[in-house]
Amino acid sequence: MLVIEDTQELLLDSANSLSMLATTEFDQLKCLKVALRLKPDRIVVGEVRDGAAALPLLKSWNTGHPGGVSTLHANSATEALDRLEALVREATDAPQQRMIGSAVDLVISVVNDPVAGRKVQEVAVVTGYEGGRYLMTQV
Image (cartoon, rainbow, N blue to C red; front, side, top):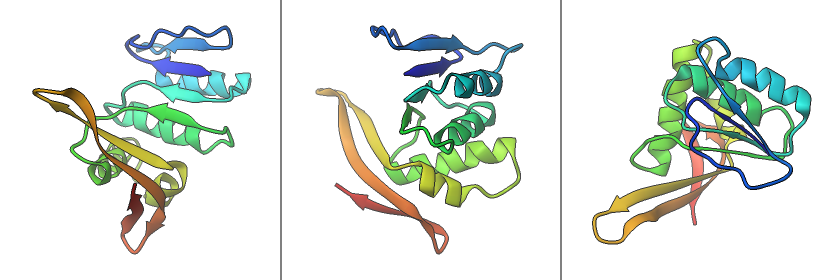
């Protein structure tokens, strides 16, 4: 597993893992290029806040690696895909909805309940993008 973050938040406790910290001089896209040469089984990109992180995330998930994980702030599973789309749009004008629909398999939406703390609000399986919307099934 390989983790790319701009602020170190994840602590890895695995012999087969590597953490990369993006900086202004060596951004997440450059980290991704190095990461792909290492051929990791999983690519984890830390919190996605802007297009500079969103586009490398999407590219890393479309490179034939068996999976990846990331977080971003949104109010629901559907809004998470819309937000990812908007963030990618900050980095490129080319529409990426079909790529998002094929790269993202699962969205887990978590809420912070004032009593119970963080809990899963919804789990959605993403099966593509068609007719101007993401195809999702709630599980």
